[in-house]
Image 1: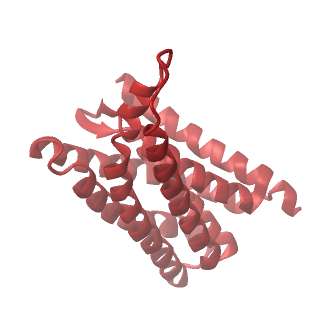
Image 2: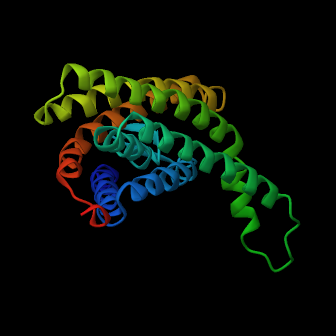
Length: 227
């Protein structure tokens, strides 16, 4: 049960750090969080773990936190700002892929100890990054659209949980389907791929539900630079 308990704690830490970024840096902090967590999640996803009896990829809770960040932006600053964050995350990931692929081409010195590890991690990144970028753009824009549509039906502050979970759970189903199909189908045996797909979405479902109280905190939070 170590991974399960650590995973819950890790998700809480991610949300707390997101709120701290928002508290101290306001809207800019949310933009920075989306850019940073998109890149880090795509590095973490190269590691597979065993959790709730299934094979899963690391990085799900960190990646899921980007949906909370864009939901906060949508809720407090509007759809335009949320879409800007989506494109910022996409651009950050694209730049990482280009820069690191060029960096891997350098011939390491005899004393180098890092090249092998970098090749292992970032050598997998192109296929994963392509999968992530396609899934990210599709699901995040879908999340923004669904969130705005749900807000028209459920506009009250007390109904924020409907907006957060409704938009995130639907958009992340598409995200998981697109990402796992491009990144892992054919890489792992079909039964492992199914496990990764199911476990990834289940974890995102759990993290989405866990993010709800943090969404309410962010709704009431007044960033330092906006007081």
